[in-house]
Image 1 (cartoon, one colour):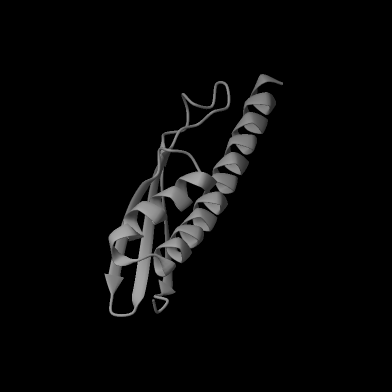
Image 2: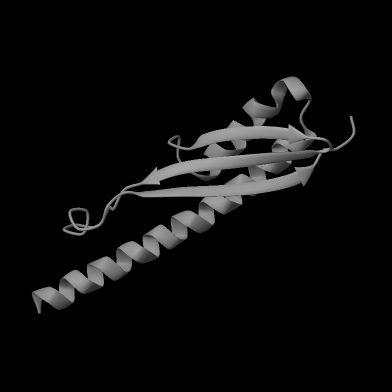
Length: 105
């Protein structure tokens, strides 16, 4: 029975990681959109605000402009939150990337 309980906790933790990964990808898309409509001097600031509104403040944001495209890359180090599972599961590094065309001013 304890082994079954531990297995269920591990399964729930994997579901939490999957949810966080999906949220991170959505935040990357939102950040890329915010950066694509912002003036050049505010791209990083607007992308960071958009990314952190959908996730936590632990997100690192990189913005790169190449030609007429802006790419936002988000990095997040996620910790296991379920009891007992945190000792068994290492931290997971998640990365999400989104690219959008720059809007003309």
